[in-house]
Structure formats: C-alpha cells, structure tokens
Length: 221
Image (cartoon, rainbow, N blue to C red; front, side, top):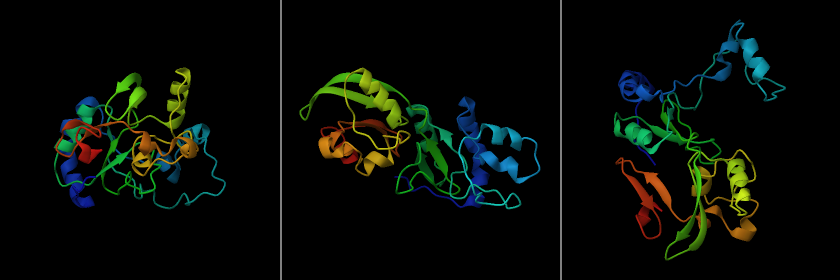
C-alpha cells in the first residue's frame, strides 16, 4: 500500500523528527522484544516469566544469543485515530511503512524490518445502523480497524445479528484478512467477508480521509 522506504541506517537519522511530531500524544512506540531482558542475567526476567502465558516447551534461541526484532517494525505508531494516522503519513522521509492490527495476514504486509508500523489495534469502535444504498438496505455494523473476531461476535450477538469472520477468535477482521477475501467458517452460507462489505473509511497516502464504496471512490473499494 505504501512505497516510502529507507535503509535501516538512515532510519535512525530521521526518528528524532518523528518524535517531535508524534510523541506529543505518546503514540510513538520504540519496538523492543518483550523477553529481551531474559538474554542477560536480569532479575527482571522473573517478572516476565511469571506473567507470560504462552507455553514454549523448547526455546527457539539460547539466552546467550543476541536478541533482535527480526522482521518486525522498529517504531510502531499507535494509530488510535484517523488524525494520528494522517499525521504519520504526512511525514514523508522515505521510510517504509507497514500496517498492523493482529498480524495474522498471509501476505506479511504487517511486518517490515526497519519500518514504521501504523498499529491499528486500538481502533475498537463498534456501532450499528440501518444502512441504505442502491446496493443494500438493512442492518449493518461498522467495525474499527482494530476489532477482533471475538469482539465483533459478542457485539452482534447482543443485537441478534451475525457477521462473517475467521475461525480464530483473536483474528483482526479489518485488514489483510478481509482484503484477501475474508474466508471463515460461515463462508459457505454467507460468502466471503469481502462480499459483505458495504463501505470503508480509509486514509490515503495523500492524507485524505475518505469513504470508499461501490458509489464513492470506487477505485479504493
């Protein structure tokens, strides 16, 4: 979606300028592996071990090995609003930009070594309306770009409605999953999630906040 790129070396040279724009709202996050402190003889590692709930019987790396982010983004931006995302995109310094909610996408567009990631995880708004257009009239649900399947399922159940979603409850419903078609357990009955989309609220690389639908900005739909 974005093609602004830079080398990892020059990334550090421009991050101070990013800080001036983004840290005002504390939305610039310095990427750091959670278990980084466990690669040294740190007492703080015990705190991580006590609260870590994922079982890994056979560790992937030895404590003596170096700890890196791998292909993950170095500086995620907490895209908790369209304004934050527009501000991040407006800073054109030839930096590769990736977009991430839960990171379940098959195409791995949510990762990128040395990139600045737009993290949509906190866009959790869910609202309902009676939608009307030339293509569809009836009940509709609007999901923020950070809504996960289990959150959507609980919300629509209270309204006695259904929504197409993935098998895994933690899957983010807006992003790579739906742009790749959106296949789930109910697809044989309700078709792909992409077939059920009515419109998108999008932020373009030109920083425009637009509605994309079959009748508006169709090239983005």
